[in-house]
Length: 88
Image 1 (cartoon, helix red, strand yellow):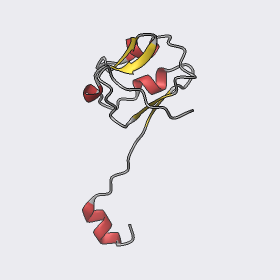
Image 2 (cartoon, helix red, strand yellow):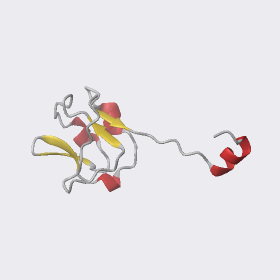
Image 3 (tube, helix red, strand yellow):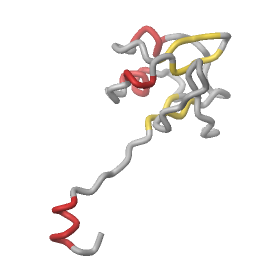
């Protein structure tokens, strides 16, 4: 994966999506499967049409037949947990 982030029509990126444009076949399966209409095909490329609506359900990532979509997940430590363990 080349790690280029796709952006929405206004050039915004939520920093969580990585769409490998070289691998994406623009089949539209993810567009049809997304329950929040986050992704769209515009101008021959896959874009984040509504990045703020993404719920991280990962349907797009799972359904992509060529593995062109990756959702980055961040680990957020609970403050109480880090205090009790002291080593994080």
